[in-house]
Amino acid sequence: MRRFLGGLAVFLGVALLVLGLTAGSLYDGLARVKLDQHSTVISEGTGMEALRAYRGTDGASHYDRLTDATIRNTREIRGIPGQVPDDKRAKNAFWQIGVKSEAVGVGDLTMSIDGVSLDRVTGMSTNCCGDYRSAGTLDDPGKTESQQHEGLFFKFPFDAQKTSYPFWDGDLGKAVDATYQRTQTVQASAPTSTSSASRRPRSASAPCPPTSSGRPART
Image (cartoon, rainbow, N blue to C red; front, side, top):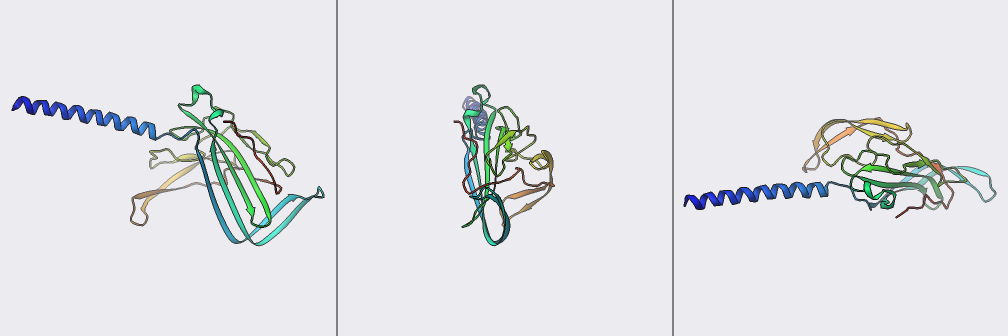
């Protein structure tokens, strides 16, 4: 009987050890952003005011003040695996984010394009793979220029802690701290943390004509 109980204890111990190692390996594999990420978020507001700058068919610059307009914002993130060298793909990803605002039924207002290299686990910028930012004009809305990023750009780490994290501010051209403030319960769900930072939009926006395109994605 003692031999049986001893064998059972050893078996259970080994099983728990294997399960623990497997769970750790699964987490390491899952807690990693995708190389080919693709997501689109669309938001819309009504009764809004906006300034529209565009190049007319006459070749001149025009500026229209819009009132009671419906403004639609489209934010698309697309991973570009081909931008990351093979020997760096285990730790790095390259995501391009495009943001376009338009007055529905009128035309485009602004657009921005950023290409950012990031650590696939921590989310921190790595600048490994040719980062860039928008530098568009009315004549060339898709123009970009090289950019050195720092801090977080897209997301917090998978195991975010109750602490401050540097988050990229496109207007300032540097990272500023997103500071942990409090933990609260939302609609009786699991507690969530909130943070704040003195931040403006991450990407510089350029006026664009009715038809515009960004940098071609490499796959």
